Image 1 (spheres, helix red, strand yellow):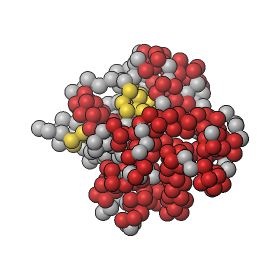
Image 2 (cartoon, helix red, strand yellow; image 1 turned 180 degrees about the vertical axis):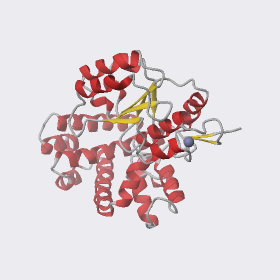
Image 3 (cartoon, helix red, strand yellow; image 1 turned 120 degrees about the vertical axis):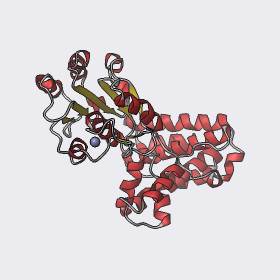
Length: 337
Ligand SMILES: [Zn+2]
């Protein structure tokens, strides 16, 4: 019998096939790190994994989790007493006390399923002491416990944690894949929007379904972000073409607030990586552009080496902004030197 693993999770075929089979046969690990940016489906994946582990129809359904048994429905509704959410509660870090509180009840058997699942959101915000406290639980977990660590950057976790929890990387989609997903879902959970709105949300999604959906529910934010994307495209063409007279007027248009400027620089990086990918391969996976036809014409004249050096300059500018260099100076350095 072929089983569809984690049916609520879009894409991510590697995670589905490898982990799905391990859960079905009971050979899964006691801890996993789900790594990916915000909106990349980490929560959906974690809840699908949690449901699969406790699903009452684990071996009797063509879907794992089945989504229909009591255990699956309780998790979907956020009502399972055996799924524990641990997070920073709005603070910059997750403290050692928060993690110690897990240990106090770790060895108490589950309430009404076969497993207790600890879902640690923003696990990369755990302090070193908190990570060391967690390590004690990861080293000798009871057979009925599972830890799912959600992180943007698993490198921020101690090597000793990573050695006990395999890293599952969330798939980042191309803009075209996000668009095709949104079109398929139109009848379901995405509100009716214009074809242009769907395209815009896909182009701004950063390759994540969650962000595209967020933009669809916030039309004002979508419009503002499209303006940022246009500025990022102008910035990239300016950096590739280097017409100094226009650079001065572009500097005047770029935002003066650090976070807003950084958002544009990250979008520019997506565009530059697309250009580089298009230089190096046929049918490259594109994030900033929807298709090869939409790539700017100057791609024919700019070399891969030049694109790489521009990427370095943009990364350096982001570093400067983080290091509190004046925004005006950072932008002037980028465009005029
Ligand atoms: Zn089920």
